[in-house]
View: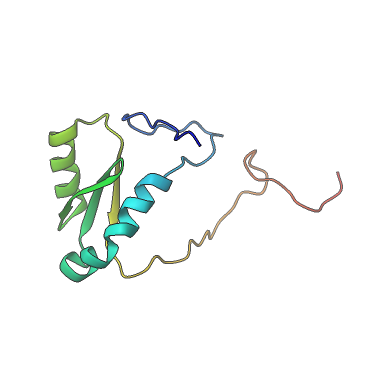
Length: 107
């Protein structure tokens, strides 16, 4: 099985692009979550590719240091350190937007 190479560049999405594949970053965060929760609960984790590279008290501090270290065009993910992830909740959805697919309705 061939591993897909991930470019170390900022994620930029177009209007109708699918969500990016963040499985590598998610795996890195989950691998470190027990330690992060124990030592840095409530802070912001900076993830660069397969590694949690730092924790910071605020998002502004995290961004400033990450951009200084890796540049503003690097692939960086900023995640709050919590014991578990909250379920995603979407309060307003435009059902006429092209990205919304209707299921089970006849045309």
